[in-house]
Structures are given as structure tokens and as C-alpha cells.
Length: 379
Image: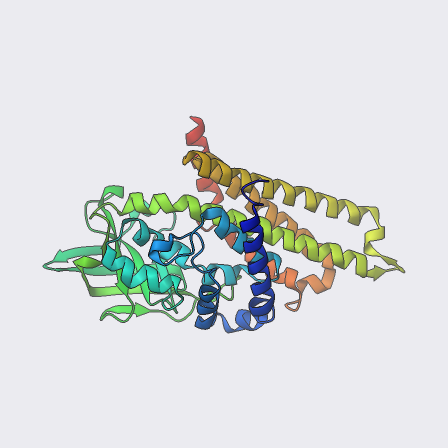
């Protein structure tokens, strides 16, 4: 028995599998076309105890840790969900951890609890038009004016930015560089806070994405998360969990595509024989399966290292790049083996092909991950 196969976690996996089959798989195509999830899905998962997995019970969560959250993600994707569903449904996984860890009790009561109950939707506002991975270069400013901060600037590519009720926002409250960044919880609807029309994306179509702009938005000082100018460390603290989550999505998306392709090559006949009867096809499947196994094993080893040592930056970075690279390879091969059907929107592997590409960008690009790895290796 490993930490992934305890009786409690096997039961959790079955619950997530059953709820995915009932609530997500029959509706995912509609949500992809609509460009967003219904708010009711958050409440459905909260009522089942799956929305707050990995968050402390004393804050309204369901308890457990990152492994439990990963299991839920795996089952949604293995059961026919999409990357957009995962990104949107679990956007609280990047929106509220900073508040849960360093926020005041008032902030926790007003944002963490109702979000984990499915009553609020949160977003995380870090990426800006002038830069993504350069968190230390944040330009959105928050100038102290009495009991308020006056916020000016813009954010882009914000997951759940359309539907979010609040945005945990990185702002510059101090000098240039990482030491001058803070986190503010900014409510939707404040004067001067504008949200764009939904951004039209290649993949993650079921996840609404927006640009946000702030023009002299007055935010009470009480909305500060942690200490002023202490936001950079809070952001970095959460990056490891985000990167592991993306690696989990990558290997699970790859395995789903592998499973779909294996069934296809058995059923599809060309020139009077199933595709699977041809050696070149069988060898493609074998290579896809090998790489999925590598991605899954590497990702779970990174979880183990992180939970056992608390310092697994190298392993997490390696796992993200490995799993995301595998996902790109496997979904590409899946489309190739499906042939013309794989290029059609009616084909599930076509969706996975599009969804895969963002995984090597979000949470730190391949290049950023390799730079992290190189520095950790001392080169």
C-alpha cells in the first residue's frame, strides 16, 4: 500500500469517478461551446465534499493534502472531463491558498469558507500584459491613501476572470523588485475595476479567461493578505503546488488519450483488418504507454518528495516538464492514429490536443523550469 492506495483514497477516487460520470462527462461538450462552467457545478462538488479537498476542515475544507486533490483531478480527466473543466472548477486552488495560509480570520471567513462551499468563485491575478513569469516585475500599483490602497494597472489571461467574485491580486506597494510586492483581495464590482469580454483561446475552452483593469480602485487596507511587501514569498510558496497540479493534469490527459486510442485501433478497420493488427500501430501504442508510465511515475515521485521533505523544487520542476512533454507527444500520436476523425471537433482527442499546449506555459514555462533545475544543480 502506498499513500496513493489507502482505503480512504480509493474511496475518494471512486466518489470522484462517479460524480464525473454523472455531472461532467455528459455536459462537457456543451460547456466547451459555452466557454464557461455553470456556477452550480461548484456547489455540486462542494456538497459532495470534493471542492474543498486538500484544505483544512477548520477553514471549511474537506481535509487531506495535495495527493487527495490530485486524485480528484485524475479522475475528472480519466473520466472524460477536460482541462478547461479542471482549471475552472478548481480555480480556488490558486485563488485562496494564500488567504488560507496568511490571511486574517476575517478574510478567511469572507472568502475561503464561502469559496470552498461553492458560494463564491475566486481568481488569481498575477500575469500582466508586459510579463508573465517575471513575477518580481509586477507593475500594477497599490498606493496607500489613508485606510485604502488605490490600485492602478492591468492583469491578463486570468482564469475564471469573467465569473470570479473576487481576485487575489499581486500589486506593487513598495520599491521595484520582489521585495515590493503585496497581495490584495479585490472584490468584483468596485468602481474602476473593469473586466474584458471573454478571451478566445485555443484550448481550455470550458474555462472563462479575461483581462482585468484597475483605474483608481480603492481597496480597504484590511484586504491585504499577510504583510505589506511580503506577497512575493506567498506567491512562490504556492507555485510548487500549482506546478504539481499541472503535471497531474498532463499525465492524466495523456492516459485518457492513450485509452481512447487503444480502443480506437482495436475497433477501426482499414483494408479489411483492425489498425491494431499492424506492427507500426502496436509500436506507437507501446511508446505512448511507456511515456505515460514515465510521466505518472515521475509526477508521483515528485509528490512523495514534496510531502516527505518539504523541499522538492528540483523534482517538481522536472516532473512538470516531463509530464507536459509526454502529454504533447501522446495527444499528437492520438490524433495521428485517429486520422481524419482526430482532426474533427467531434473527437475527444482533438480537444485534448488543444488543451495540452497550455500546460507547458502555465505555472512556469519549460524554459523557466529548466532554469530553476539548472540553478538547483549548481550550474
